[in-house]
Image (cartoon, rainbow, N blue to C red; front, side):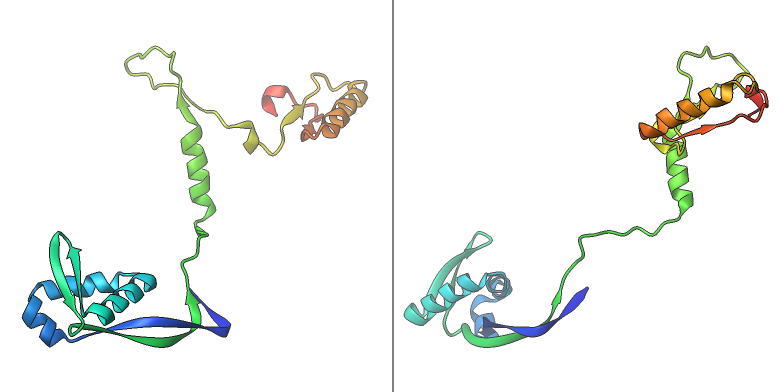
Length: 182
């Protein structure tokens, strides 16, 4: 991703220039190691290398276990003003785009259990069950009067009020249908 800047950022950078013909004749395959080494240097290290080359004309470095001499005839630096008009970046927020099916599947998979204390009998399937955490339930408490008598109505409403005051979601089912059929 990138973001355009209102005012460009102006930086002074050292750009390396190689005499690849001269460097290739002298260093052969090792010239690629020197190019890689210099390109990976920070701006401060490039400035230090430039100053050493300007003062003595030669710098000795150890690259991947090899001692090499970098001469000022192989490498020169040019200072340039670089203007940056946009900044490129990698976002740190990942926004997955998957549907409800994957979420439901994940919940079902992580709540599915087999009874561990069950005896294994040949030909009979193992008893399985779902064990959902209470955080998934939209209604935490169900109030089911055992009888459809009207005197239980106010008591159920008092219980419901007390639960809702405590911040617990609940529901009354006073339809008169037997509990096992609700």
